[in-house]
Amino acid sequence: MYIGLDIGTSGVKALLVGEDFAPVGQAHAALTVSRPHHGWSEQDPESWITACEAAMDELAKAHPDAMARLSGIGLSGQMHGATLLDADDRPLRPAILWNDGRSGTECAELEEMADFRGIGGNIVMAGFTAPKLRWVEKHEPEIFAKVAKVLLPKDFVRLWLTGDYASDMSDAAGTLWLDVKARKWSPELLAATNLTEAQMPRLVEGSESSGTLRPALAERWGTPEAAVAGGGGDNAATACGMGITAPGTGFLSLGTSGVLFAATDRFAPNTEEAVHAFCHAVPGVWHQMGVILSAVDSLTWLGEITGRSGPELTGLLPSKLGGPSGALFLPYLSGERTPHNAPDASGSLLNLRRDQGLPDLVHAVLDGVAFAFGDCVRALEAAGTNIDAAYAVGGGAQSRQWLEIMAAVTGLRLLIPAAGDFGAAFGAARLGAMAAGAGDAETVLTPPPVQKEIAPDPELRDAYRSAYERFRAAYPPKG
Image (cartoon, rainbow, N blue to C red; front, side, top):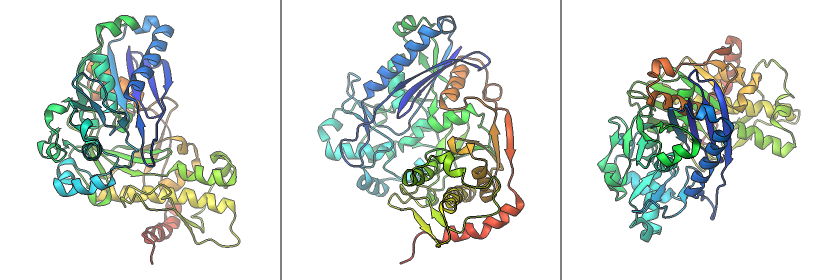
C-alpha cells in the first residue's frame, strides 16, 4: 500500500492506493489563505500539519487493514512557498506563498546580482522563493537574522513526518537557488540572498527515500515505519501520475490557469519567453513549462458578468465549429507569464461588432485561451522541445469544442485519459512506491489508457492560422 500526500493551497489530499495503484481511499482537509495586505498571500505552516493529521487520521480510521500494509509515502505540494524556521524548527512567520506578489522590487535587484537565468534557468519572478527571502531581509531583518532553515511547504510536512530536512530536485528548482543543470544548490545564487547551503535541506531525487515515518506517527496510524519519498512539486508529481517522464511527452492542463508541461532529457531554458525550466521528479530528467495565468478563469470571468456557468456558456456554441470567432480575446486578465512575462498585462476584447452576441464572445474566449497555449508551444519549440501529443486534463478539457480549437491552434494531438485520478497525489503515491522498492520509472510511472484522441483538423487549422497571427500582433497594444 502507498499514500500520496498533496499539500495544496486550498487543502490537503491524502490518497491511499494498492500495489496495483488502484485507489483504496482518500481524505481531504481544507486550508485557508491569509491576505493581510494587497498582493500578499500567506499560510500558517502549522495548518499544513493539522490538515495532514486530519486526512491521515481519517484514512487510518476508514482503512485500518490497508494502512497496516503501508510501505511508501510520497509528497507533493504547492511550490515556491518560503517557510522560515528558527534553530528549534519553529516557524518564524507565516509562510509566503507562490501567489504572493510583494517582492517585485527585489526581483529586479536579484537579476542584477547573480546569474539566476543561466544557473537557475528562470527569470526572477515574485512567485519564486529567493526574492521572498530578499524581501524578508530588507523589511523584517530581525526575522531574517534568526533563519536556521528555509523549507518548501511539502518539506515542512516531511520534517514532521520523518524528522529530516530534505527536498527533491523538482521542488528545489522552484526556489531559484538550485543549479538546475547540475542538480545541486548553487553557492552563487544563495550568496545573492545572503544565505548558505547550511540553511537549505539536503537534496534527493523524487523517487528516492528521504527518510522513514517517525515511530510515534506509525503507531498513531497503525502503519509500519514506511519510506517517505522525495516526492515532487505539484506539476512534476502530476506528470509522474500520468507517466510523463520521457522526452517528447507532455500534458496540457486546462484549469483555472493553464500549463503546458514537457519532459526533457536536458536542462533547456528559454528565459526570453518566460518558459520555466526545472528538474523533473525522477533522476536524469528535466522539464519545461509554459504557463498562462487565465485559462478556464477567462470563461469564469465571462460567466460572472453574464450570470451563467461555464458549461452553460459553451452550450451556446454549435457542437462543431467551422473557424474562429469574429471577435478577438486576449486572455491576460491576471497578467501573463509565457511568453510575455508581463504581470501588469490586461485582457482585451477586440473586433467587436453590433451583430455579435454572447455566443461570439464565448467563442472568442475559447479561441484566445487556445492562442495563448499556441504561444506556449512556440516558446517550448524555441528552447528545442517538440511534442507531438499531450494528455489534456483539467476542468476545461470537458469541452469537446475547446479541445478541437486547442488541437487546431497548437498542432498537438490531445489525448483524453480514461476515467481516473492522475493528479499530484496519485503521482506522489507512485513516487512513494518507487522509494519503497516497488520498481523503476519504466515499470511504475506508466501512462494511463487513452479514452479518446483529438487530432488537429486540417481545415480547422487552416481557418485558425490567420486569426492566430492577428492575436500575436495585438499584444503589446499600440499607442
